[in-house]
Length: 328
Image (tube, rainbow, N blue to C red; front, side, top):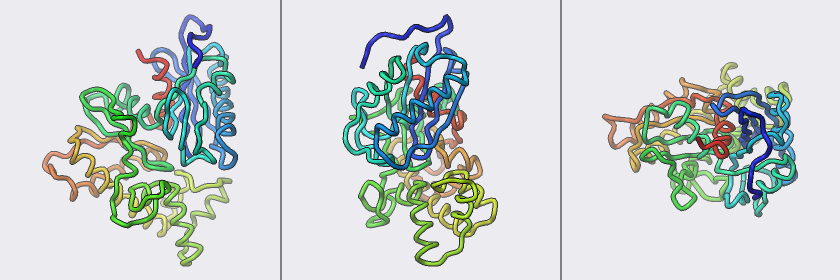
């Protein structure tokens, strides 16, 4: 990674990119973490890491244009990415097209944007942002649960991020059913196999196309010119009283409740923050339903953790990524 900083104006500005399975969210912030501009682009569904990186560059340039700054004037750009991350290289980002092998994401974006880039785990940077700036501020320990294409987790313990040996927080791969549904990771019974948006979509297709269950999910997807069942499509289906959508979401909530409660039983955190595309879109009513599903599984059920929806909303992951280059 190239050292140093870019030339920048008197008021330092920073970029953040949140790379998700459905969308790429970019933001430009000032040194008080206030958003000056933002942009969103769909995550490519075909190609490979280079195609995704190109779309990330475009999203950041769009956000910089919205903020009326040049990318090269930024003090740095932080990226929150799924997968295994080491020195700016990303491997095994399985919810992204063709991304199994190592790809030098930081250096690729540095060349494209002409400023320093740092890469961190997408869910951990979002959790850090909620801890420092959002719903997690009153607490010294918390679990971030980011419910979107997959189900990611982040941890704050004793006021500090906890990443273990590099793989901590993989709450989506807590087993909630022995020999259960196959997960995208290849294992059986993971929470993500029931609650991840990608798994929910695959289940909806099987129920609709193979078993004949009626649903408006795919009609709504076509009407809104989407290629996937996004969080917004699920929300619209619920508004339409779509019975299959309701059943699949209930199945997801049962899995979330069991998985989150199991982690709380081990770590006894003060709070759980629910974020991600589905978590933010469905909001507090669904957070409360997760609480209800957690309760039967909690060991210390007389003092459950506080549960909040992520306060930073859709920009939380990108703002969290910007903290990688603006740590103060």
